[in-house]
Length: 224
Image (spheres, rainbow, N blue to C red):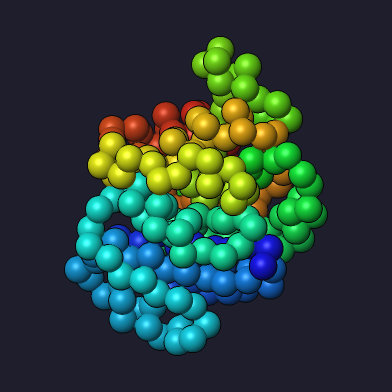
């Protein structure tokens, strides 16, 4: 199995169905797994509507890091794509990602994200290139640009070297743990296309951590 899609969900039932369907529409996904982190909304009912097309694992609330740890353990693919439940896969993912899955010595593939649900009137600008190749020196210089969770596909051979992560330390922003380690365990492939959508809404982890939409747009590779 080439690629597993692991959807991380906590109380995002209003968005979860769209995320699941977008993952199922990716024909290269060997499996779609929903890890529910102790939701108290309708998330499990929404997931159940997809029946045997997906696998649903419900756990006690432990934060995003614990979801990544469990998702990695449960997934069977050589590559693992952690998709946030409020985001979605775009059709171009089908065309672009499979081209990269047979390249050796790669720790992750990353790509641009398209903002949607953006009601603030702020138009993000693409200020930085997506780094590729050997990026370890960029990390050491503090200049490495990363993309949020749904903009990364990770090689299992990389994840097995660094997971499990300390879950309590990464209840949110667990993607930062993966993205800061990736350049030291292989090369990075950059795909300069919009392959997934990042939803802007009031409950994003980055919004909760005090990063405004404008600051977010300038820090990450996003576009409308």
